[in-house]
Image 1: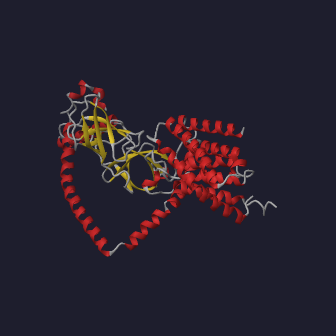
Image 2: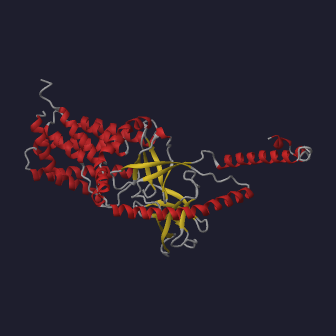
Length: 307
Length: 161
């Protein structure tokens, strides 16, 4: 009898949780207990890591220092180039009259737990609602996109990784802009591109970047590297496999990206308006004695000029 | 009498430890066969003090596990309630069995629970590809004698009833 009651109760809870948002606030509050439990759960790992750190020799530290210095030098060289390129990019975009590429805001976060179920690829991070994390927010590591936030709790949140079987992300081949959808396979080292035509121009070694078409991930971040392309005449589409560029199962520190909440259209109109205001100002400064110069255009289209 | 006789907090303490164990990090190769700590600990207490620990306890602990694991609320609760029901039904016989026979029976019980888990996971979209879902049941059944001995020691020393 009691079994029946509890079974029905559990089933009802599951359905409500899956279909409606009614229980989400409750879940979020219950999530408060998650962080301390995972903290204690990871204690052995933490102790082991700090112990190995204490015992690492001076030589090892020196070698690591050397390596990091070399890496930094290389990064700086690339950064120098990047400044010039960014400048050029902004100028070109101005010429094209499109919205300027703004740097996204980021927030550093640390991994605190891994989902105990080995068949789902989810992790727990140490930033939550109190830090402004929102549902669907993209997460990056140093090498590329990692996934998105699927559950927000007060001080922690859960991130679904790109390689989970339930996850897909719209991507583009960096070389030629070919669009595709990369789906997770449940293998942390592999993504698969869905419905790529056999004749599509895609080959081994191509870099896939996020296309931003799903309106969830920002455009232009590296996602994966194509590792094999199989043309099987028995299959309707080519089989394309890719390796995620982010180290999904090794990264400890990650970045949460805060993208612009406005739609591309809003962004475009707002930047266009700002540009027009700037133009008008420059015009007025250049010709203070001839305010009638732009006037002939005004009667033709008065409502737009008023804007 | 209430102050002396029922050291019920021991039960809750061990169940909390089981919750911790169920989310603690493990080496990659062991993750596939992660023992069902909660089910193991709960089974012991159901067998030992069936008048104290029953389906209600199982359900509440299951809900906590759901929150910790981020699964649908009610999924682990349902499975733990099922396990408790089966163990409660069998407990008169189970208590008479020698250890290896208990392990065998528990293998079947945990296997059934894992099967239900698999169905529920499939309903929500993620499906493990192979037969590996029975591995945790096997590992748990092998661990049963040790868990049982350990908890019995605690049980007798602290006089839970």
